[in-house]
Image 1 (cartoon, rainbow, N blue to C red):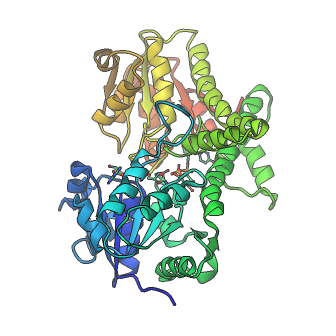
Image 2: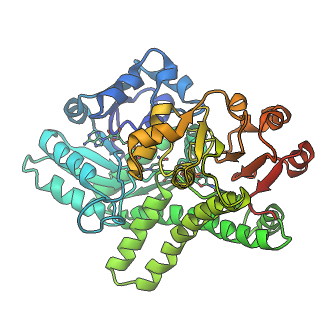
Length: 466
Ligand code: NAD
Ligand code: UGA
């Protein structure tokens, strides 16, 4: 028998918790969904009557929040109340790479997840289904279960793994039309019942055959592996982009030619300045760490190469800029178009732009940044976090603008680091006129047409093309 869920709590109101729960609330009007977070500012933003103040920019999200908030979707800092009232609790907190102790720089930091488990153990008075939504190392559910089973309050907990596969910028569409939903749990009768309860939520809008049930460990591991495979494709095509630049091959033609093979497929073959985002690097490092901890050195080395290649791609781009700009960028004005790690998001975590700009600042370039969704404060915070130079120096060398065309005045070069659609529609003729000559454009996203840019007069470089 499937237990009917009427109250859900999600711990963590971030890029996953917010959109995922908004979609569940929209598709399941009979379920009350409460998203809780310890970050008061974030919760205030989720509750702001001005929907442009939501903490996350995602196409389609505002409309759903407007429709459901206050009806069956609630955002609160009262974590304990959320836990107490819910029948099903999603843990959707951050799991960053550890910055201290054993596994520093590789293993996932599970302290936030463990805190959630301990809190649930302390507060719960009725039976709960606890769902791991965060991306976690294989066998984490065992640790959560051990904490919950030793709460001593007689409450029964079922632990499920239900990793999220949405991509930022397309989160709502990805949730509405998920290729698959993965639910890992025990094969015991109560485990099966919990898996079916969670399945029934997704069945409100997804066909049953797209909901896969597995054991917990397969589910946890599949999430890491899916991200590793996706990132591997980007690194693979980026490695070939370097080879294209040395030959007369064109990376776009190569991508198309191999992508037409139905065994390879056309997606995730866009060469770029390097992948970013909060998860690809973190999850591969985690996979590498797990493999190494089991003594699987060759497996670990294989996956680590995906990250090594990604770092190479970013530094290769900077090196090419410097060499082209007559081996020095000191005192030169360089305008950066795009700071987010991809278009249609305000998320900048691990964005290639941060590392490209940091390297240019090391060469004493004068940088001006434009991004349609990322705030000035965030840009400075990202650079300050690297701790390469003082915050004062960062503010001296870098300015942020909301006028991309005007910013190009007297600039030596422009670098396109995020593929925002609006960059295609800028008045490039006007931009060319106001720049110093020769006017260089370094396109790290292959966004613009080479013939058009050459025709205007630019010295235009497109990654993956000689
Ligand atoms: P995030 O940093 O945007 O959000 C996490 C939130 O959890 C924060 O607001 C934080 O304040 C809150 N939090 C931390 N500890 C808490 C606690 N003890 N009690 C209450 N709230 C707490 O992170 P995210 O991007 O949403 O990622 C969450 C998880 O989902 C990660 O494991 C990530 O790997 C995974 N994931 C992310 C994406 C993505 O696109 N961002 C996609 C799939 C999976
Ligand atoms: C990725 C996965 O696509 C999601 O399935 C997963 O849920 C998520 O990670 C996660 O676990 O966090 P996301 O990082 O949001 O999603 O965005 P992607 O579209 O995967 O792009 C990641 C990076 O790769 C971006 O910087 C993007 O510009 C770059 N990329 C992607 C390329 O350079 N080329 C491509 O062909 C595709």
